[in-house]
Image (cartoon, rainbow over the protein chains, first blue to last red):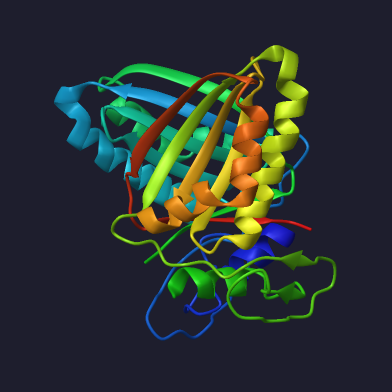
Amino acid sequence: MIRSIRILLTFATAPVLFSACGGSHSVETSNEERIMCEKLPMQSDGIVRLSKIQVNPDYLEEYMKYAVEVGTTSLETEPGVLTMYAVADKLNPCNITILETYASQEAYKSHIASQHFQKYKKGTIHMVDSLILDDVTPLNQNNIITNTIKR
Amino acid sequence: MIRSIRILLTFATAPVLFSACGGSHSVETSNEERIMCEKLPMQSDGIVRLSKIQVNPDYLEEYMKYAVEVGTTSLETEPGVLTMYAVADKLNPCNITILETYASQEAYKSHIASQHFQKYKKGTIHMVDSLILDDVTPLNQNNIITNTIKR
């Protein structure tokens, strides 16, 4: 529960409705509003991954919309999707890297079976020139990343 | 201040002593303790970077100790170091990637001038076969990463 507590308190200045999954909580704020599900703790079979995508330049703008949509929906609604942080190289914006963290193998299977991931996968498959999934190990297990969507 | 407020509230279940820099706050918790400085908000000249390091296999274990130490000290003491998240490829642990985020150019200059960074740089320069600094742009500016050290 540590991660989900952290998520809740991360939003303790915002009106938070943990409704997409998990329990429901609401906190007042002055200037922000978010909807975010509670997160599962990282399990021993969790996944930390750098997904490296080379996008066809002809489709880059369209691909970015799909990528932002699937990342936002996954973070907001999936308790087992702990990070989905996508960046584009400044020198070659067609080179996209996504830091993906799943709480467990089950969470990953649930993610790839989700409607929003399937929409992304089917909608972008012709836009992707190459995809490399590099599973990685954090050097420091006490180095904690919390990934949220600001609304 | 949003980032520093978020950091504070991220730790609202932990006894937090924001003493390394910034103000001092203490909050009760059941099971965790951390020391973390308050963070600066991301500025328009901030940096998001993927540093890609290939470590000489003969020095990998020693390099990892330096990398963990500089990451921990930077996150805990530098208000302008927003992320320092290092991962190693599972298939080739000599390939290290670090997600580095600096609140501004000034924060980056302060980081590379710091005693702990200089210790890391001078202590590991003979261990590093190659270093690539890929500056990147997050696809979604509302996708927020918070990076902390669990104690």
